[in-house]
Image 1: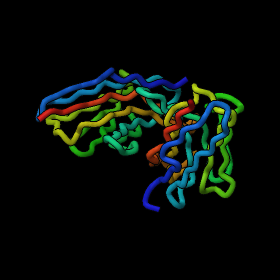
Image 2: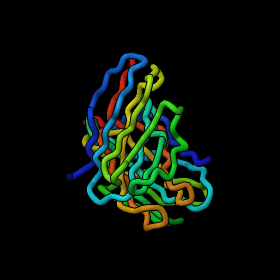
Image 3: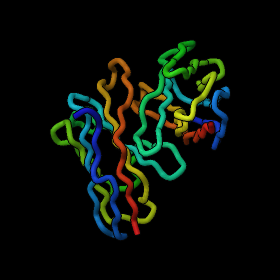
Image 4: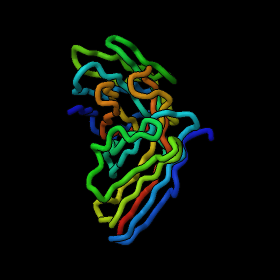
Length: 112
Length: 117
């Protein structure tokens, strides 16, 4: 079946540091890939997405590129802020299966 | 409404009790999903509705779990004879598109935290 593996957390960074959260996946067919974010006390919300190979999703300074050859969708941000502290979930949507599969989440804490 | 609404936000049940969890999706959204999220883990798929049709219930862990969406909007997840292992956050998500249509992202509710004592 489909699966998503994220780098384990928690991750603690200082403000303005560079962020990478690794994500790799296993899926049949050609899934779409997503990053969702959950801020404290809130529900999951879409951060960015990519629907085909080599697509780059971007939002709020975050980026991730759909790499089919390495089955990866790593999340990056050049300069994190305290307000980026949250839990980040990598997910895939398999059109054939009609459902999304999520990673276990990575908790990011940014300190001033 | 503006977003996906779930109620109650918290539910404590004694082992063996039945519970019902409600989800109000975004108006007009065709697809509705239920997920179960254990502490420290990602959401795990339970079931999927396209309008009123339950197209996939492969993730429901046992026959004590039942979901419905009779009019294609509000959905209820019912758990009968709750067990301690049912303790989790239950998330509802809706999306605009149905199967075979342009992929649209999931919009999540804040979840219902169920604790079975």
